[in-house]
Figure 1 (cartoon, rainbow, N blue to C red):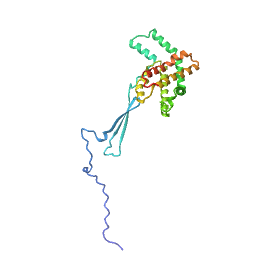
Figure 2: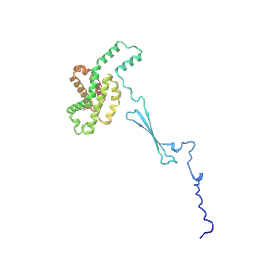
Figure 3: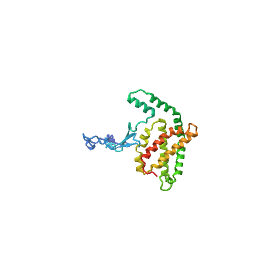
Figure 4: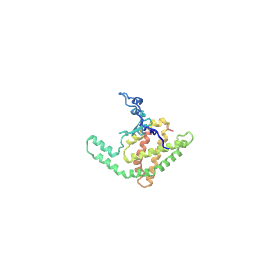
Length: 262
């Protein structure tokens, strides 16, 4: 049957959501005299490297109130210049002296340069030997030191326990490496600047006796000279006059600051 009457009205279209009134959104207002919270550092701390060759500054920023899940952290690296004095060699030292005096190289300077170059073959051979056999040289010198002074590795000795023994071997390798630097450079100043300066305070704070250390350095020189002599690179006196110089300088520097010899 035919129905009469008006059709039901259609649903009205969905209206877009009305924006919230501006008064409902409360944002903190930054004071004119202070930066916004997102730019205020929470932590600003320099982190110096062990050798103080650089400084790293870490900055953490507080979260922005509008973005609470966002945290910023930044690190800046600044190299420090002239922290350690540059290493010098015999030629640079000689030329620098004459440059300060404003003089040409005279006969004495030429003789010094000639003597240095005459010894260059033996110096290079010694450095190559140390570079190639560093671990064996340290091991042989340490074995001779333990045999001559066995109380060092007995309970109560300075090299007793694996940790202390490893520290002793590490120090001997450290002295051998810097002795090779001074040997090829023909200059002992770098030993004073890089090794001996401050070593007295370090050994005092750790309670390390320098007597065994001096004997260990002398044994390193003995092993190096013996191996060079076996290679036929010169006679005993010539090798000792050149190769033992940096080792003897280290021994004199440590003996002058002897903490506890035994």
